[in-house]
Amino acid sequence: MDLRDLSLVFLVLFAVFAFFDGIVLHLWKYKLYRFKDTIYEHKLHTVRAIIFPIILIGFFQYELTGLLYLIVVLLGSLDWIIQILDMWEEKNARTRFGGLSSLEYILHVTLTSLHTSMFLLYLISKQDGSLSFQITEIQVAHQNFHFVAMNLLPGAIFVALLHIGLCHPYFRDTENFSGTQVKLEN
Image (cartoon, rainbow, N blue to C red; front, side):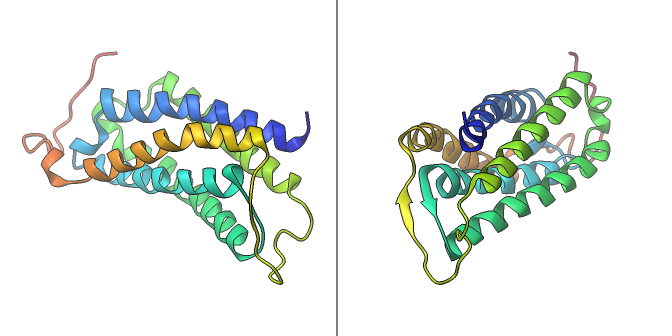
C-alpha cells in the first residue's frame, strides 16, 4: 500500500466519522442551525461542507495538475483555517449544551487527524511538476480513487445543500433564539 492508497483509506474513514459527527450530532441531536449562539458554528460547517465535494473531485475523482490543482490545494488549506475557527468557536457555541461531550471531543480529534493525514499524504504522494503552470491537465483518477469519489460525492453534495438550506432563518427556534440555555439529555 503506497501513500496515495493510505490517503484513500483515511478519506473513507473520515467520511464515515464525519457523517456521524455532522449529521447525527450537529444537525439531529444538537440542531446547531436553530440557535443564535450556534448559528455561526453551523455556518462554518456549511462552508466546510461546500469545500468537501470540491476536494473529492479535485483529489480523488480526477487527477489535476497546474492551476486547477493549486486551486483545490488552496481550498483544502482554507478548510484547515475554517476548521481552526470552528474549534475556537465551539467553546462559546456549546455553552447551552454544557460544552462538548467527551465523545464529541474524541470524535473531533479523530476527524482532524484523519482529515489532515488524508490531505498531507495526498500532497506528499503527488508527482513532481503537479504545480507546474506550463500545463493544466485533467485526467480521470485511478479506478479505486474514482470509484470511492463517485460513491461519496452524491452524499457530500446532499450534505452541503442541506447545510445551506438550514442556514435559512425559517429553521431558527424563535423562542430560544435569544440565547436561553437549553441542557440536552445524553
